Image (cartoon, rainbow, N blue to C red; front, side, top):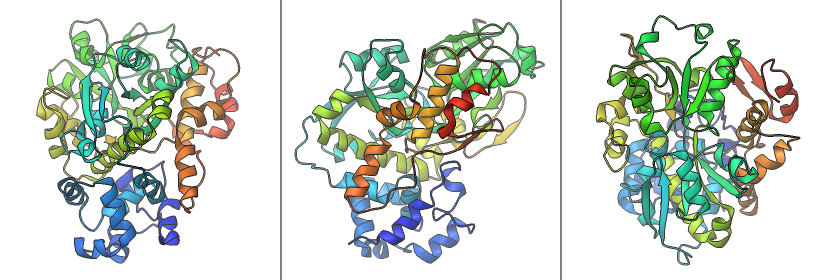
Length: 460
């Protein structure tokens, strides 16, 4: 039987409000290195002596070269602490029990946008994570988020990279006919920035931005909601004082160059590409608005999941595995080398490395070291979904009353993961609702309606 108490301690202490590598996985105030020295085996051989732990690692990474890549990326002494930090071990164990021999589908098309947020999804290809699960996955580079949505609805894509609010909007019939869609994992946290044209370098105060035009990737995006939040906190009405327009990420820097827009709230690496091209500067990283905010997600239609449960479980395992490698890797340069290529991001290696490593110039002569500029934490907390819903309601995208918890729990599949954990005899992580601090203001997801009423600038 698994050592439930030991693993319960690991994931009970998980703190989603703090970066993955900034805190010991056990929740203690000591360093992770001290914890690992005391509790984590010091070699692969000792690691293998723990049957459950070794079995979980082997279940996530059945192909030995991929498994070794994970252990190298994590460091032998940190592997299990890292796994426990990003996903409760019992949830992984439940996934490992899936039937690998009875996949309903083995050939799949998965859409993605060429942004660094898609790193876990993309890395599953060169790492062999999909083939390890018996899947032949075609990653389809897609021009924009409207096309991502439409190709999932028409079943041209079986599963997809999404902006994390998109499955909420699709399920509710916002911007399209209602099409029930679920978030399986969050692809990344942080990883965005507000970038302005260099001609505005003397206008750093947002109160000076009246009349500006900003690009965001899509209406139903964290980029749109964070930009609106930031503007409103500085006294600007995002619907009357500025113009906010959707622009596909690959076109954003060109629109900044030709003067179509004054600024972007863009996903990386396009913020860094604007600096690289000498056209823009990074005004603020999105983590300075909300540190640990969700960005992109991976998911599929409810119909696909219901018809192909084993296939979807295999996909889930593959992407969780890639997320773990991305989360714990101390060599972001190596990650950049895997995803900068034409088939994926099609960006200069220098640009992708700067965005992933957090070692970057800002376009104004400054150089910065922000290791958590982008993180890869896959847990789809219901509280994240509730915050997104409050912003959809705030800006008039949702009309009428909203049952925040009901929608969040239906679309973000944390509840199902908790159920699998209970059935496996494990205690799930406490709750599904985390409190967040966004620009100094606390968000309590159990009081969403009160939170919404507190904003002086809104459309609801």
